[in-house]
Image (cartoon, rainbow, N blue to C red; front, top):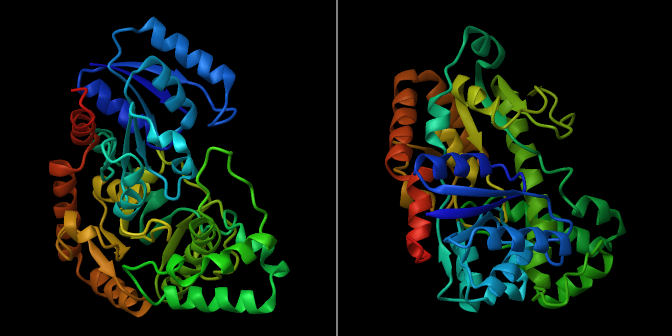
Length: 390
């Protein structure tokens, strides 16, 4: 098995690379950034030359679907496998997802159900995974405990810097701002069902678009205005508000560490520890935290984000917001703990901080489930088999 791996510094590329090597497959890397994910002559030329230099390659692979790779693979009639780890991912609106050479794997079932009809034989559902062997190789030192031991931690963005809604909020009519605020407040009281897109009409979305810093998609894209407004403007804003409100409530009662590059001055009692390198710091933070929080980005409507697999794969005890697909893969309260409101979260934090043995057993159970069913060493062959190249 020979795989041409188009790498662009995605967070999970290192783990997938490690798995490919452990599995004994031959990996041919193309480490090159995109000038454009749609039309990049230099990228196309570099990939074409690599395919021609490796006529025995079985497939081309990338994290997230990239139209420029799809175009190249179509010309050479070589299977193009992509595993999407982001939601939303604008490239999925490209008509290039229709190509018969594609093998597109999506981790969120609602995302899959939306895009699969465009190419039903070539788009698949595939949950994410974990580079367990790498996490296992990390041994905590005395200095690690000194640096990272804590009761509760959250590693990640507060989304304030990612939320395009913040840049246009002041320009919106008052009635529109009021509707958005009410919609976000309502959504934050409901876990397991994202109704933001269902709550805005096409007319409302088109009106909102007039005030937005709208970046038009390429001509060969199916632009879904409602979905883009719901996900990248309102969804990201909802994520920001959830994380601020949850972390404010938690840090008001408990000793809480936040690892982020976002501004966090609006959460006065939290310990803002700054940024955390995903490979060289985050595993140690997870292992040294009694409780690891997960708050899923709202555009991920039903699926499990990569962070859950990383937290559990590193042996961490996890309390996460409810996501509809979590009970399909993990036993709730035995492998992972879910919360359905802020008061519920506070009660569960208080309980598990007082019950060390139960907390540690749940973390161990979760780790064992990851080891048995959810590693990259399991996922990669599964994708290759579904793609018909293994």
